[in-house]
Length: 461
Image (cartoon, rainbow, N blue to C red):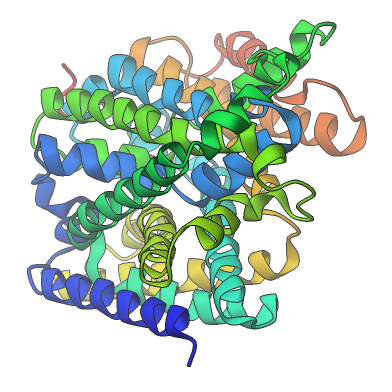
């Protein structure tokens, strides 16, 4: 009997049970999307950490640093930590104070319905890409544990993830995040402690070449290449809908701000473990065909059977805590900002059913993309960059200034997306995202004289 697979199934059953129990407290769309705005500092901090500390933070980050050295950590952990901390310092308070239900509300109240719909068209694919990365990682874990073909493992993983994510909404998500976040922390700390106590990690660290410790790239790397590597995770993810949903679900603006700062700090503390393992990886596990399997391979080698089962549960925790948040936030944009504006007469029960149906639909899209992709890291990179240049520019101007209106917003969203896509896929520019950001700013300001600024009427203080 494959006890690892049995352990995985048992762990998944426990997580599903928690989601079902908490879901009984959900009766309205606001309960489902924002947990009734009831997230305190502890729950909010853990939820932010667990939502962002996903498969790419363990498997993807360790694998990239294994292959590229510390500069491969420009996205994870260092870029995403900077992103979360900046959101807490700059965006958390004004976003919460305005009383939004979803991030899409900002675009409607400030710029109008047309801008809201265009912004959603750009944001929802990002959720699908993020979800696909997590589902693929889940499939990798199951495949590694059971010897199932990766396609079969991804499909099984997707079925569970979609069902699990549909059940509980943000409140169930936040409570399971606590369990999942603790499992991740314990699993990584135990693995690192075993490697340290045996002297294995110290011996490997002593053999790490100095050039692998260059965080900002090797000497001679053009500045714009380095800036691009940091801009994509920091700016591209700064206004991710799954992070904003946690901010909006907190009990107050101060709680939202502190939760981001605490969650980001926890992320850095825990994220340094995969980073160090990735740096030492070529010594600890030389010649890996798939660097993303470094951490699972080290766990298999150095943990006993029972501990390895628990560690695999920790990996799954990191995945589940991210994917359910992503699918929920993406569904909220579709149902709350599109469907319910077309059908405002729907009952609370009908709104809740449509919200769950949106999670199901996005989950199926993510499963399809996970099957078609080749790596977790590539999906994550596209998720951070897709359409986010214009979103960042328009949201920042909309939150903090009265400059520009509908025309400015549409020009910026379209320009940012077109320039990034052309630079990344057609012209092969070395810094397509930075170019898209600059172009989006220029487009916004150039169009500012046309079309009056909107107004955010709710709680604008």
